[in-house]
Length: 300
Image 1 (cartoon, rainbow, N blue to C red):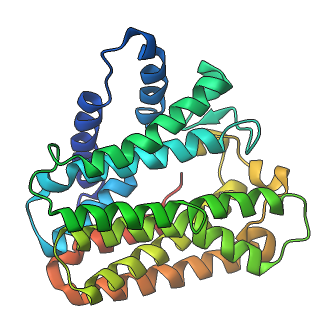
Image 2: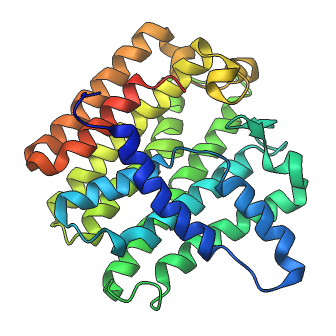
Image 3: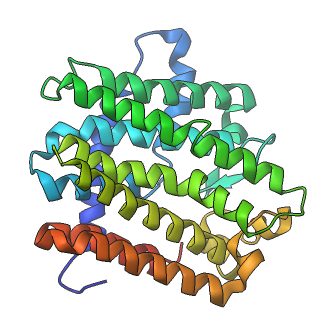
């Protein structure tokens, strides 16, 4: 990372902004639903870096500077991402006991409540995006475009399809085409959406939306490849979850197919390509470039 750009402070600034919104917005007046909201907030505030909101703000900053307008959208994506983690950790899926160094949601609240908390986070994400009172300055057509593209990126043609393929591949017999499909859909699709969202809400042209989506896609692929490598090379303390769990479960990963060194090389190529996409936008692309470098260099 460049010494004159405080990426940690930058990401934390946007994380705090989204956190404040979530703290205030995810509430209930119904005493009978208080346990549900407690479960939702447990995972929302479990200590993640909030990388996806940082990508949204960074992409938007290339096209506009009125950042308050997009905070509900950044928060919505974080809600949806959190739902996917809660469900992925369930015994029926990845069966993880820890997430970000803390017991997973179902370990604290039980499986039924964890499932419902995930359901509530998913639906509340779209509620947040489409609430006109909450987003008075976002044109209706942009609201619809943002919500529609999020549903595509995270449904049966995106993230959910990737998770399904990931589970199926645990039975063995996978090859590089399955690994590519999993990475493209489970991780890259949502990060591609995050960076495209900035262009959508910032009134970017169609070419800008395509550019930012591709930047995020390559960022997402590199992110997942680095995750695969860290599962083998990192420690449980560094990762906040059981190290080597992917290998133990026989998951389809880049490391399984290509080995550590080749996987690292592919990730570097992806990051170089991602940076080359945003660099022509000039100084405004600096945060996007620094985030890309961080994805490659991170240790957890």
